[in-house]
Amino acid sequence: MWSIPNMIPLPPDTILEMWKAIKPYDFTATHGLFPGWDIRDENVKKSVLDSMKIQVRNQGFASHALLDEE
Image (cartoon, rainbow, N blue to C red; front, side, top):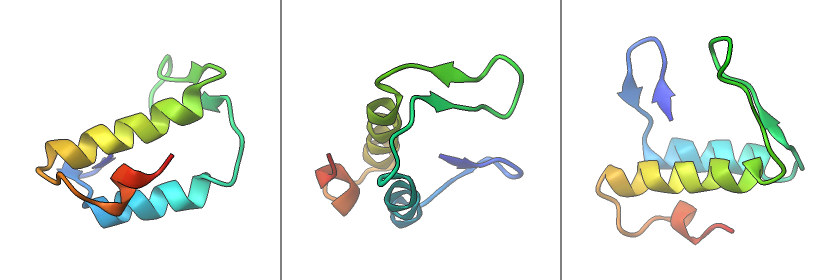
């Protein structure tokens, strides 16, 4: 959850907007910026949400709407 050009962490509200944009879709793969960074897994959607939650918590937010998402 980084702004790739300048490596600044995205704010929790922006991460939540990203989750809301992809949540309605069922997917089993993510595609990375570089070759070899693609992930194919039946549980990848849960992994994406878990990663988003880790990012929000590591920014010091113990309470945020994203952390209530399932």
